[in-house]
Length: 116
Image (cartoon, rainbow, N blue to C red):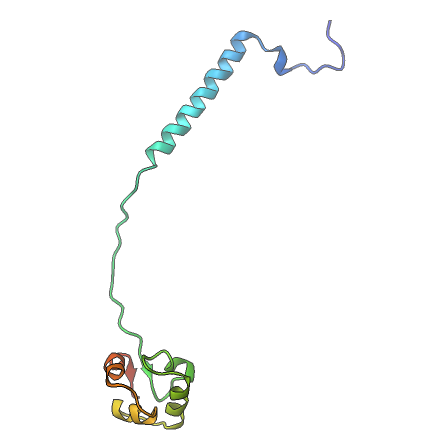
């Protein structure tokens, strides 16, 4: 005789066959999950397209001090001197306005500087 406070279904009242079915379903779930995980576990080669970007250009005659300091060999002091000496039209004038820029830095910055 069942007591009124007991639920209709209780795990502790399962029969052997019902327990076996639950174990088989659980094992099947684990097997399918493992198969799906192992199938996708390898490295996949992703095609990558590389395009060369043109160098960023800094217009010496309109650039801010912060933009000028991005140029090789230009610190904050030199950038301020350049701003005060505008307009500038050549790399040599730029070097003079900054109070001197080493030749190696002028060579490195020539692709990044425009005078407009």
